Length: 134
Image (tube, rainbow, N blue to C red; front, side, top):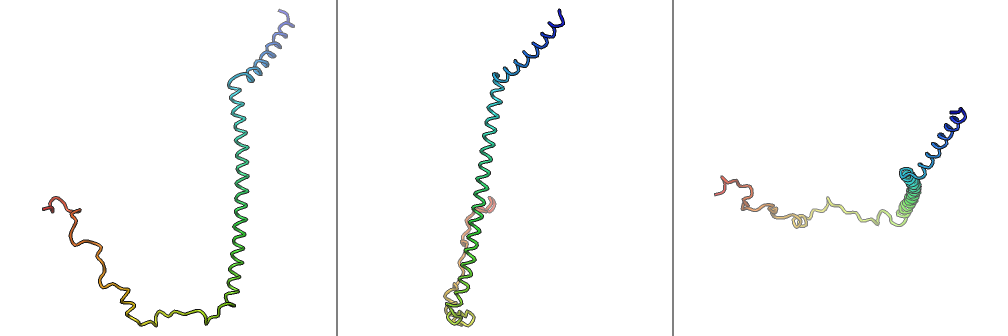
């Protein structure tokens, strides 16, 4: 064999090997499955990023609403505190003195003559053993 022929043979084998690898990667089922899984992974990552952005937006909006509610509550509390002193004086508020009330008839009506029994006088026999059952 000639030296040129061996060189052409080696170059042909290398080129054939490269073309074979490209052809197998495009046509083989594993390569198609790999490409499909890769596309699904990229799509899932995009969906996850979109969902994360949506959650961040939701929580920031919720925090803003809660902040507004807190400000409105403070404003309402200050309004009530300022105007309650103007609308009602200390003499208008009724005072109930519970210690000065010596009326015992009301106390007797609220208490029972006898406390109710939470149990029956007759035993049910639930906890009797065979020795005690007679």
